[in-house]
Length: 147
Figure 1 (cartoon, rainbow, N blue to C red):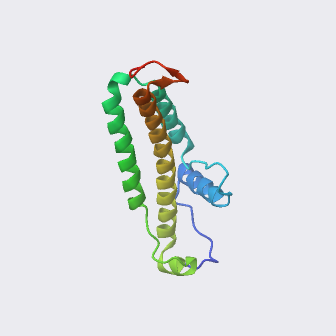
Figure 2 (figure 1 turned 120 degrees about the vertical axis):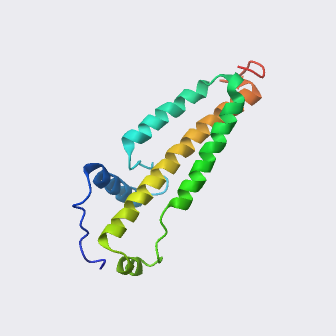
Figure 3 (figure 1 turned 135 degrees about the horizontal axis):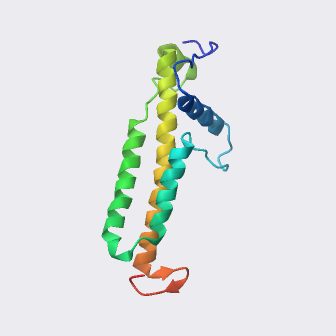
């Protein structure tokens, strides 16, 4: 495919088109600006679930540590699953791939980046709760080893 040629997105559904659009918008943002998930409703649902773990019972500390490790492992493998371009030069990559292959790569990248970002936040919340339990501190008050 030639870089000057328009891509054909006609096979995509509205969710896929939106994901590619959001991903494209993210590319133009400065690094210090907030990242927008390509799958905002799924992301918000996972973030709402993650927020529930800030008050997770201390007696389940072992489970929290396993969850944290699972989230780290999931992110590691998601990043490994992201498609690798055949070349770092955009012109060469475009010449080697068809329209459908390019679009598939864009969708996979937007999915991986969104999930990794979301699961990273989830992992941070769980790690924060683990720290609160292990250090016995909730909102600056020491309540002993179990809150």
